Every structure is written in structure tokens, then in C-alpha cells.
Length: 258
Image (tube, rainbow, N blue to C red; front, side):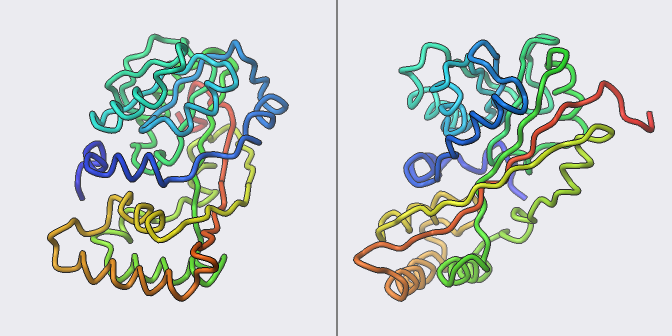
């Protein structure tokens, strides 16, 4: 499998334009459940083009983006340049280079599945202040949400280069193991993203597991995508159904079995 820190180098523009943002309802939930304030310092791990970081910057937080991919990091810095409270560094979830006990929240949007869980957990424990929180979130689509979601997933199964390997869905027990021996809570948000054909194509091309231009399957894949769009479009748009899954909790210093 391609190094995850390099997978999105040529996907940046489509990722920035066509990946969905995160529900604003995340902020009041964290305020109520985790004591989030504007003074909290955030380490956003795998910050990418800045989609999750922006949610906290709009809230007034200081956000440090941790992003190992050059192209994604540059795009994030450009998109978030208007926020003086944002900075980003070249680092990974397992080695952030941040000082001990220096942040109040560690966040990860659409990136946790790329981490080494044990090494990342140890690093998060190190950089979090006492009583700090971890919040892991992603925008997922499920085939059973709508006919177009099902057709789109069948397209990915047909043409995706390593779709099955990359997209093994995280399960609640995976996150429970990460937070153990502590507990984590979860929240779910449903929403639709409307696409014209160019948007649907851009959404597809933002994925790291689809064939590149010039590959024998590239043009057939786009022809089939056009057929899907024509089959389900209404007034030139299709609605893509998402579920945002969010898990949040605190990490103890050591495992129960250590």
C-alpha cells in the first residue's frame, strides 16, 4: 500500500473543493460535554487542507495543524491564511514534535485510519494537558443510505485500486480499544451534499484509491460515473448522503494491563 503520507499529493485541489466540511454542531457539543472554550489549544492531527481546523478557528481557538504531506499542508496553510491563530508543522500522529502537556484537545478528521494506534495514543497522552480530550471524527457514506450511495460504492469496488484495504470501516470497538481503559462517547450527524456532475466527479477524484489519468480503467470509470449521475440526478443535481461519526474521550496515562 502506498505510503499514507504521500497518497493525496495529487488529490489536493479536488479534496479542497469537493470533500464535505464538518457539522458546526460539533462545537456546542464539545462545549457542553468537554468544557471546550475559546482559550483551548487544539492539535489537529492529519490536518490536510484544513477542513476540521477551520471549525475550531471560527470558534476562536488556537490550532496547530500536524500534516506530513507537503501538498496538503501547503493547501491548508493557504486556505486558512486569514486566521492568525493557525499554524502548521511537518509531523505525524506518532511524532508530533509538540512539547509535553501543551494542548487541550487532540483532534483527527478523516485521518485516524492512517495512524499507528498504539504509537499515536502514547503521543497524544504526552502532548495533552491534564484533563485534555481527544476527538476523532470522519464523514462517511454508507451504501444502504440511498440508491446513489449504493451505486457509487459499487463503482469504487469495481475500479478502486485498493479500496477494500483502505476503507475497512472503523467500528466502535476499534475506538473503544483506543480509549481504553477509559471510556469514549459518540455522536452522529446526518447530512446531504449536493453535486452537479463536475462536483460528483471531483468528489470521486479526491479519493486516494482510484486509478489515475492514463490508467486503462480511468476513462471507463468516468463513463460509469456519468451513467450513475444521469440515473439519479434531479434538476442537474444528485444528493450524496453522509453520516458524520464522532468519538471523544480522555486518555489515561497507562493501559490497564501495563
